[in-house]
Amino acid sequence: MSNTDFVLAIEDLTVSFDGFKAVDNLIMYIEKNELRVVIGPNGAGKTTVLDLICGKTKSTSGSIKFKNQELTELAEHEIVRAGVGRKFQNPSIYENLTVYQNLEVSYPVGRNVWGSLTFKRTAEVEERVRQVAREILLEDFLDMESALLSHGQKQWLEIGMLLMQEPELLMLDEPVAGMSAKERDQTAELLNRICKNRSVIVIEHDMEFVKKIAHKVTVLHQGKILAEGSMDKVQHDEKVIEVYLGH
Ligand code: ADP
Ligand code: MG
Image (cartoon, rainbow, N blue to C red; front, side, top):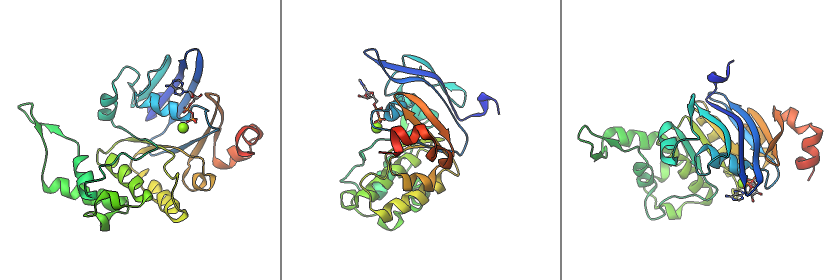
Protein backbone atom coordinates (compact mmCIF):
# COMPACT_ATOMS: atom_id res chain seq x y z
CA MET A 1 0.00 0.00 0.00
CA SER A 2 1.51 3.35 -0.96
CA ASN A 3 1.08 6.39 1.28
CA THR A 4 -1.39 7.94 -1.14
CA ASP A 5 -3.89 5.10 -0.56
CA PHE A 6 -4.57 6.13 3.03
CA VAL A 7 -7.53 8.28 4.00
CA LEU A 8 -5.30 10.18 6.38
CA ALA A 9 -1.52 10.44 6.15
CA ILE A 10 0.22 12.40 8.91
CA GLU A 11 3.94 12.91 8.35
CA ASP A 12 6.55 14.59 10.55
CA LEU A 13 3.85 16.61 12.30
CA THR A 14 5.10 18.92 15.04
CA VAL A 15 3.52 21.68 17.07
CA SER A 16 5.38 23.64 19.70
CA PHE A 17 3.80 25.90 22.26
CA ASP A 18 6.51 28.31 23.45
CA GLY A 19 9.22 25.77 22.64
CA PHE A 20 7.36 22.81 24.22
CA LYS A 21 6.62 20.16 21.60
CA ALA A 22 3.13 18.86 22.39
CA VAL A 23 3.26 16.79 19.18
CA ASP A 24 6.74 15.80 18.07
CA ASN A 25 7.45 14.50 14.56
CA LEU A 26 4.33 12.34 14.50
CA ILE A 27 3.84 9.82 11.70
CA MET A 28 0.44 8.11 11.46
CA TYR A 29 -1.56 6.53 8.64
CA ILE A 30 -5.27 5.72 8.80
CA GLU A 31 -6.94 3.40 6.30
CA LYS A 32 -10.38 3.58 4.76
CA ASN A 33 -13.01 2.16 7.16
CA GLU A 34 -10.42 1.81 9.89
CA LEU A 35 -11.31 2.46 13.52
CA ARG A 36 -8.15 3.68 15.25
CA VAL A 37 -7.96 4.28 18.98
CA VAL A 38 -5.37 6.66 20.42
CA ILE A 39 -4.45 6.10 24.06
CA GLY A 40 -1.79 7.50 26.37
CA PRO A 41 -1.29 9.33 29.67
CA ASN A 42 -2.75 12.79 30.32
CA GLY A 43 -0.78 15.45 28.50
CA ALA A 44 0.52 12.97 25.89
CA GLY A 45 -0.77 15.18 23.06
CA LYS A 46 -3.85 13.15 22.05
CA THR A 47 -6.33 16.03 21.95
CA THR A 48 -3.74 18.24 20.27
CA VAL A 49 -3.45 15.73 17.39
CA LEU A 50 -7.22 16.05 16.79
CA ASP A 51 -6.94 19.86 17.10
CA LEU A 52 -4.25 19.80 14.39
CA ILE A 53 -6.27 17.57 12.05
CA CYS A 54 -9.43 19.67 12.33
CA GLY A 55 -7.49 22.95 11.97
CA LYS A 56 -8.25 24.33 15.43
CA THR A 57 -4.51 24.42 16.10
CA LYS A 58 -1.96 25.25 13.40
CA SER A 59 1.08 22.99 13.10
CA THR A 60 4.63 24.26 13.41
CA SER A 61 5.79 21.84 10.71
CA GLY A 62 4.83 18.66 8.92
CA SER A 63 1.98 17.46 6.77
CA ILE A 64 -1.58 16.16 7.22
CA LYS A 65 -3.05 14.77 4.03
CA PHE A 66 -6.71 13.77 3.90
CA LYS A 67 -7.46 11.89 0.68
CA ASN A 68 -4.24 13.43 -0.64
CA GLN A 69 -5.38 16.98 0.11
CA GLU A 70 -3.10 18.97 2.42
CA LEU A 71 -5.11 20.10 5.47
CA THR A 72 -2.51 22.18 7.28
CA GLU A 73 -3.19 25.12 4.94
CA LEU A 74 -6.98 25.01 5.26
CA ALA A 75 -9.35 26.83 7.62
CA GLU A 76 -11.52 24.85 10.03
CA HIS A 77 -14.71 25.19 7.96
CA GLU A 78 -12.87 24.08 4.82
CA ILE A 79 -11.67 20.96 6.65
CA VAL A 80 -15.25 20.20 7.70
CA ARG A 81 -16.37 20.65 4.10
CA ALA A 82 -13.58 18.34 2.91
CA GLY A 83 -15.23 15.58 4.98
CA VAL A 84 -13.70 15.65 8.46
CA GLY A 85 -16.03 15.71 11.48
CA ARG A 86 -14.84 16.17 15.04
CA LYS A 87 -16.63 15.74 18.34
CA PHE A 88 -15.29 17.54 21.39
CA GLN A 89 -15.40 16.21 24.95
CA ASN A 90 -18.49 18.21 25.94
CA PRO A 91 -21.53 17.79 23.71
CA SER A 92 -22.60 20.94 21.90
CA ILE A 93 -26.22 20.23 21.08
CA TYR A 94 -29.14 22.68 21.11
CA GLU A 95 -30.78 21.72 24.40
CA ASN A 96 -34.04 23.56 23.65
CA LEU A 97 -34.56 21.83 20.29
CA THR A 98 -35.91 18.33 19.80
CA VAL A 99 -33.71 15.46 18.67
CA TYR A 100 -35.32 15.75 15.24
CA GLN A 101 -34.56 19.47 15.00
CA ASN A 102 -30.96 19.04 16.14
CA LEU A 103 -30.39 16.52 13.35
CA GLU A 104 -32.32 18.60 10.82
CA VAL A 105 -30.24 21.75 11.40
CA SER A 106 -27.09 19.67 10.91
CA TYR A 107 -28.06 18.71 7.37
CA PRO A 108 -25.45 20.26 5.07
CA VAL A 109 -26.69 23.55 3.64
CA GLY A 110 -26.24 23.88 -0.11
CA ARG A 111 -26.06 26.91 -2.34
CA ASN A 112 -28.41 27.22 -5.29
CA VAL A 113 -27.42 28.53 -8.70
CA TRP A 114 -28.11 32.13 -7.62
CA GLY A 115 -25.65 31.78 -4.76
CA SER A 116 -28.19 32.14 -1.96
CA LEU A 117 -28.34 29.66 0.87
CA THR A 118 -31.04 27.08 0.51
CA PHE A 119 -32.33 24.73 3.12
CA LYS A 120 -33.83 21.56 1.75
CA ARG A 121 -37.09 20.88 3.59
CA THR A 122 -37.69 17.79 1.63
CA ALA A 123 -38.40 14.14 2.04
CA GLU A 124 -34.69 13.68 1.49
CA VAL A 125 -33.85 15.53 4.72
CA GLU A 126 -36.50 13.66 6.69
CA GLU A 127 -35.26 10.33 5.38
CA ARG A 128 -31.71 11.19 6.36
CA VAL A 129 -32.77 12.35 9.87
CA ARG A 130 -34.61 9.07 10.46
CA GLN A 131 -31.74 6.99 9.12
CA VAL A 132 -29.21 8.75 11.39
CA ALA A 133 -31.59 8.57 14.38
CA ARG A 134 -31.73 4.79 13.91
CA GLU A 135 -27.95 4.59 13.80
CA ILE A 136 -27.57 6.53 17.07
CA LEU A 137 -30.36 4.65 18.87
CA LEU A 138 -32.60 7.73 19.15
CA GLU A 139 -35.33 6.73 16.72
CA ASP A 140 -37.90 6.64 19.54
CA PHE A 141 -36.80 10.02 20.91
CA LEU A 142 -37.13 12.22 17.82
CA ASP A 143 -39.75 14.50 19.37
CA MET A 144 -38.11 14.78 22.75
CA GLU A 145 -36.54 18.06 23.82
CA SER A 146 -32.81 17.36 23.86
CA ALA A 147 -32.36 18.76 27.37
CA LEU A 148 -34.31 15.74 28.63
CA LEU A 149 -31.96 13.14 27.12
CA SER A 150 -29.55 11.19 29.33
CA HIS A 151 -25.88 12.19 29.25
CA GLY A 152 -25.12 9.20 27.00
CA GLN A 153 -27.96 10.01 24.61
CA LYS A 154 -26.68 13.60 24.30
CA GLN A 155 -23.29 12.20 23.27
CA TRP A 156 -24.98 10.00 20.66
CA LEU A 157 -27.00 12.94 19.39
CA GLU A 158 -23.84 14.91 18.80
CA ILE A 159 -22.35 11.97 16.91
CA GLY A 160 -25.58 11.94 14.88
CA MET A 161 -25.24 15.66 14.11
CA LEU A 162 -21.79 14.92 12.70
CA LEU A 163 -23.12 11.93 10.73
CA MET A 164 -25.69 14.19 9.05
CA GLN A 165 -22.73 15.72 7.18
CA GLU A 166 -21.57 12.27 6.06
CA PRO A 167 -17.94 12.74 7.07
CA GLU A 168 -15.38 10.32 5.67
CA LEU A 169 -13.28 10.79 8.78
CA LEU A 170 -14.93 11.10 12.18
CA MET A 171 -12.92 11.98 15.30
CA LEU A 172 -14.21 11.49 18.84
CA ASP A 173 -12.46 12.67 22.02
CA GLU A 174 -13.34 10.47 25.03
CA PRO A 175 -16.86 9.63 23.83
CA VAL A 176 -17.82 7.32 26.73
CA ALA A 177 -16.64 9.53 29.62
CA GLY A 178 -19.48 9.70 32.15
CA MET A 179 -21.56 6.98 30.47
CA SER A 180 -23.16 4.02 32.23
CA ALA A 181 -21.82 0.50 31.52
CA LYS A 182 -24.82 -0.22 29.31
CA GLU A 183 -24.36 3.01 27.36
CA ARG A 184 -20.68 2.16 26.86
CA ASP A 185 -21.60 -1.21 25.34
CA GLN A 186 -24.18 0.44 23.11
CA THR A 187 -21.63 3.07 22.04
CA ALA A 188 -19.15 0.32 21.13
CA GLU A 189 -21.80 -1.30 18.90
CA LEU A 190 -22.68 2.07 17.42
CA LEU A 191 -19.05 2.81 16.53
CA ASN A 192 -18.55 -0.68 15.09
CA ARG A 193 -21.50 0.06 12.80
CA ILE A 194 -20.53 3.56 11.69
CA CYS A 195 -16.92 2.68 10.84
CA LYS A 196 -18.24 0.40 8.09
CA ASN A 197 -18.76 3.50 5.93
CA ARG A 198 -15.96 5.78 7.12
CA SER A 199 -12.71 6.01 9.06
CA VAL A 200 -12.93 6.83 12.76
CA ILE A 201 -10.33 8.05 15.27
CA VAL A 202 -11.26 7.67 18.93
CA ILE A 203 -9.33 8.90 21.96
CA GLU A 204 -10.26 6.85 25.00
CA HIS A 205 -9.01 5.74 28.42
CA ASP A 206 -11.48 2.94 29.13
CA MET A 207 -9.53 -0.15 28.06
CA GLU A 208 -12.54 -2.49 28.18
CA PHE A 209 -14.23 -0.18 25.70
CA VAL A 210 -11.08 0.14 23.57
CA LYS A 211 -10.91 -3.66 23.26
CA LYS A 212 -14.42 -3.74 21.82
CA ILE A 213 -13.79 -1.20 19.06
CA ALA A 214 -10.11 -0.85 18.11
CA HIS A 215 -8.81 -2.20 14.82
CA LYS A 216 -5.42 -0.79 15.77
CA VAL A 217 -4.19 1.19 18.78
CA THR A 218 -1.69 4.04 18.79
CA VAL A 219 -0.04 4.84 22.12
CA LEU A 220 1.12 8.43 22.46
CA HIS A 221 3.60 9.60 25.07
CA GLN A 222 5.16 13.06 25.21
CA GLY A 223 3.94 13.85 21.72
CA LYS A 224 5.55 10.77 20.18
CA ILE A 225 4.36 7.29 19.30
CA LEU A 226 5.39 4.84 21.98
CA ALA A 227 3.77 1.81 20.36
CA GLU A 228 1.29 0.95 17.62
CA GLY A 229 -0.51 -2.18 16.54
CA SER A 230 -3.20 -4.60 17.64
CA MET A 231 -4.70 -4.21 21.12
CA ASP A 232 -3.03 -7.46 22.07
CA LYS A 233 0.40 -6.34 20.94
CA VAL A 234 0.14 -2.93 22.58
CA GLN A 235 -1.19 -4.36 25.84
CA HIS A 236 1.83 -6.59 26.24
CA ASP A 237 4.39 -3.95 25.26
CA GLU A 238 6.65 -3.31 28.24
CA LYS A 239 7.11 0.39 27.49
CA VAL A 240 3.34 0.83 27.34
CA ILE A 241 2.82 -1.02 30.62
CA GLU A 242 5.47 1.14 32.25
CA VAL A 243 4.21 4.57 31.19
CA TYR A 244 0.49 3.96 30.92
CA LEU A 245 -1.27 0.67 31.52
CA GLY A 246 0.60 -0.14 34.72
CA HIS A 247 -0.88 2.92 36.46
P1 ADP B 1 -3.97 14.78 26.12
O1 ADP B 1 -5.20 15.01 25.33
O2 ADP B 1 -3.15 13.63 25.65
O3 ADP B 1 -4.24 14.67 27.59
P2 ADP B 1 -3.25 17.43 25.22
O4 ADP B 1 -3.12 17.25 23.77
O5 ADP B 1 -4.48 18.08 25.72
O6 ADP B 1 -3.01 16.04 25.96
O7 ADP B 1 -2.03 18.29 25.73
C1 ADP B 1 -0.68 17.98 25.45
C2 ADP B 1 0.22 19.03 26.06
O8 ADP B 1 0.15 20.22 25.27
C3 ADP B 1 -0.14 19.43 27.48
O9 ADP B 1 1.06 19.64 28.21
C4 ADP B 1 -0.91 20.71 27.28
O10 ADP B 1 -0.79 21.53 28.42
C5 ADP B 1 -0.23 21.32 26.07
N1 ADP B 1 -1.13 22.17 25.27
C6 ADP B 1 -2.19 21.73 24.55
N2 ADP B 1 -2.77 22.75 23.88
C7 ADP B 1 -2.05 23.85 24.18
C8 ADP B 1 -2.12 25.24 23.79
N3 ADP B 1 -3.08 25.67 22.94
N4 ADP B 1 -1.19 26.09 24.30
C9 ADP B 1 -0.23 25.64 25.12
N5 ADP B 1 -0.09 24.37 25.52
C10 ADP B 1 -0.97 23.48 25.06
MG1 MG C 1 -7.24 15.13 25.88
